[in-house]
Image (cartoon, rainbow over all chains, first blue to last red; front, side, top):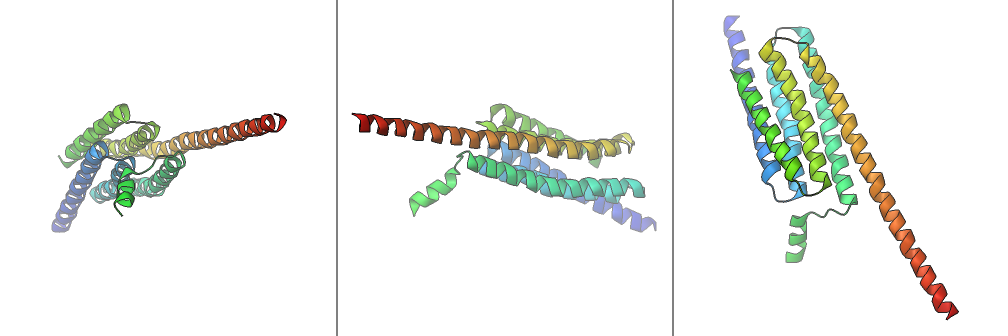
Length: 110
Length: 108
C-alpha cells in the first residue's frame, strides 16, 4: 500500500513537471513567434496540453474525492472553452484581414 | 516543492503573456494574451489551493474559468460585428459614390 502511494506520488510529480514545461514553452513561443497565427498556436498549446498534465497531476496528488471531481470539472471546462476561444479568435482575425505571413511566402515561392 | 516549481513556471508565463499584451502589434495579439492570462490564472488558483492547503480556491478556479470564457467571447463578438459593420458601411458608401458619379456622368 505504501509502495503504491509512492508510485502515484512519483507519477503525479512527473505529470506536473511535464505540464510546467509545456506552459513555459508555450509562453516563450507566444512571445517569440514571428506571426500572429504561430503565436496563437503556441498560446493554444498552453491552453490544452498544459492544463491536462497539471490538473491530472493535481488529481493524482489528492486524497479527497470532492476535490478530484472539482479539478476534473475545471479540466473539462478548460478543454471545452480553450479551443473554442482559439477558433473564434482565429476566425475573427481572418475576417478582419489579418493574413498569415508564412503562407504568403509559400504561395509566392510556388 | 513541485507545487512551487509549477507556480513559478505559471508566473513566468503570465509575465511573458503580459509583455506580449503590452508590446503586441494590433488588437488580436492583445486578446490572445488576455485569453492566455485567464487560463494561467485558473491553473495558478488550483496550484495555490494545494500550496496553502485550502481546497476552497478550486471553486474560485471553476468560477474564473467560466467568467474568462464568457469575457473572451463577448470581446470577440463585439469586434467581429464592428469589423463586419465597418466593411458594410464602407462598401455602401463606395457604391453610393459610384452611383453619384454615374448620375453626374449621365447628367453631364
